Image (cartoon, rainbow, N blue to C red; front, side, top):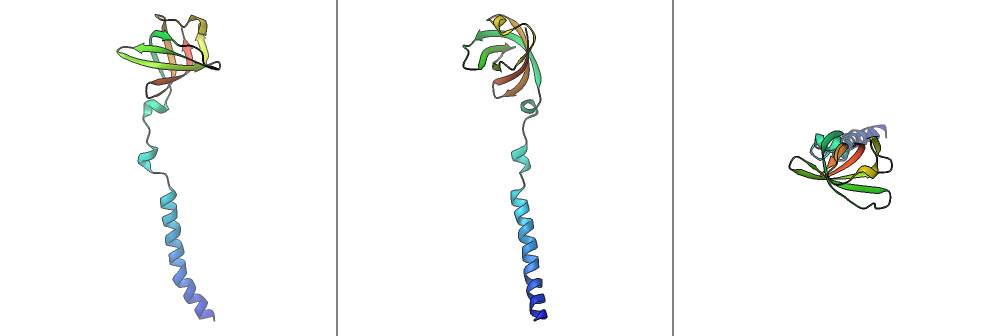
Length: 114
């Protein structure tokens, strides 16, 4: 009886160990999928000129912002910090510094400086 249990254990144990390691490998996140552009992860500051202010939608406001030859849309909320100035001063032609995170062509602002 003991020898049959031992024989079963020696046959099943390697299978369980290998299937566990396969499950661990398949559930691990892929390195390529986890890689994200540094510019999308880190906060950055852009300086440029407002080209158009958009209407407020709920708690979110936005404006178009030109930096050199590129145009971005800046989203900000009532929780966005204004280092200088206020939302009332955001109009076309105003020079502004925007600190936030870039995703595509949209900057989610954390600090605005007019």
